[in-house]
Image (cartoon, rainbow, N blue to C red; front, top):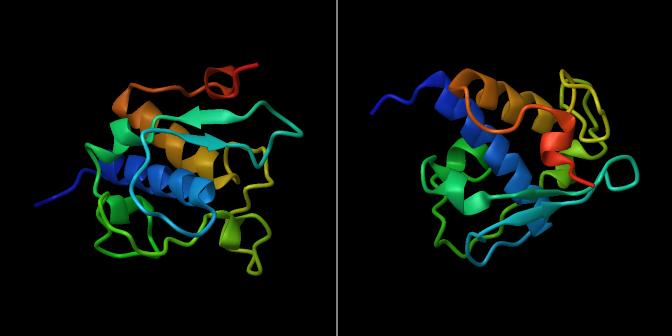
Length: 128
């Protein structure tokens, strides 16, 4: 089955978001996830995980955990474990607010724009 590039982008973004929220271990895919690593700069983001997980293969986003399913009880590395303070310059940093450097901004917003649905502006996700 072929996966559209926009679906792939959305899935990668979902995986990053979910991995951050789990901070390491997943028992079952949650309905929603609160992303609060940038709370000192911007309000936290409530991410509707189930909406995304129902339409995208988990391992598309959870790129370090292949063939992951929402019902699996395997350890899922958090996004922050690699993306909060990356050791390699080619790994995107969650600390970047830039739309072109922050992995959530890059993946989520790009996918939302390609699909022509979903939030794509700062205050759409970072609600006060």
